[in-house]
Image 1 (cartoon, rainbow, N blue to C red):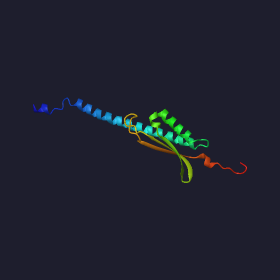
Image 2: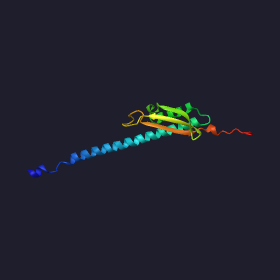
Image 3: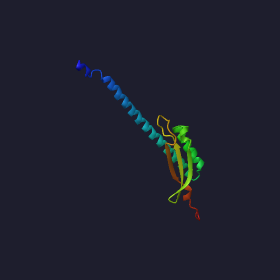
Image 4: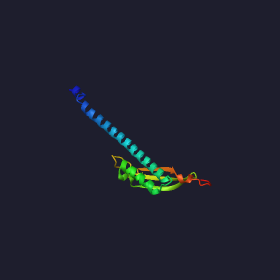
Length: 136
């Protein structure tokens, strides 16, 4: 009778279920982490493109914000493009444009707390390199 109480017979199925459940949660967490890194990359690239557009010779701040908004909206969703700002800055004596994007941190799918990502991108203004000399 004592041998029957200490038998491991039939314990494989519960052990399998517990291990599989744990591995499933680890896999889902890894997928969500990679997804958040992907969203961060999209936001960073969109902000950089917006800064480059605004810093172009014929670019305006509105052009930069509009481009960043369009890129983020087409790649992710409208909710991630709701807080985009732009400002003219000077970095080490060089005129530049800074585009800032504040977006939620995706925790479960695209849902997450607001302000999780605060991304900034800079681009040097092209118009400062114009030279107007005699004979030009």
